[in-house]
Length: 385
Image (cartoon, rainbow, N blue to C red; front, side, top):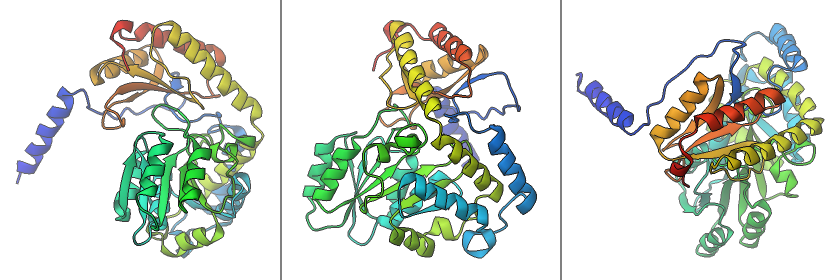
């Protein structure tokens, strides 16, 4: 009976030898670490207006939603948030899920009808990849941000329903997908475009409406947008936004919507308050852009491999998984939290540190964090793309 546990131990040992062990590290409230690993881009997670709105809803509704959305889990807070999200994103309707992961699973599966071809970017997030897998649809994975490859995949399947699946700002390297070009190709072939705008919403676009809006695609009838509510909006949950007919389809058939307990009303209310602040946060977005440019200048000058980011994700190449782990640990020991990305979390077998910029971090702490990252880096000669 213990054989299966021994097998798990052997697999864990193999991961350890490859530098791929993952460890949970609890953090205390109000710890003094400079956080360049979390996703609180606009610094709204602890904003007084956000926490006040969540506290009021907590008192009114209690801790949880007490049921799925179609049973007893839909509250005024959920519907108000959905209306606000649809208005911000410029879509007919928006539907809130309990996580961005579940939103992506629902969106991909909901768009995949019989004979549908899914054309998925090689650097897509795991939730999009899993959505393609559970949909049962044929999936063609194309080279990263390669519009010609997408066009070729669509041309090879004439007459079939198809969906082009992409992130907007990619979560690993922070680069921006060529959304306008992808949409043009998709439309030419009668395909739909599904965009996960998780790292663009709140950070890019007019009024922070995201990369889809920045590309001029807001409200297009052949575009569906997903996003998390846990990054620039500082809360939790996910959203699918698009034509009213598609949202109705998800309400009636989406398994990750129908059979999941709803997002807690207090979180929905807090996210709604954060959305209002985010729409008016042009100064915060300008600060993030300025910090991204500063980070590239400082880190590149130290000989590190750092591509110019298109939003608030800065990626640093590490020579190996072990080096990335040591680099992140050394930074943490000096009071700076950074993301450590290693295979299989990376799409190209390269290991990286990922810095996510946040307006909640003071300018002085941010510049100090850059100094720590440089001081803890592997030798520049060892860092290669």
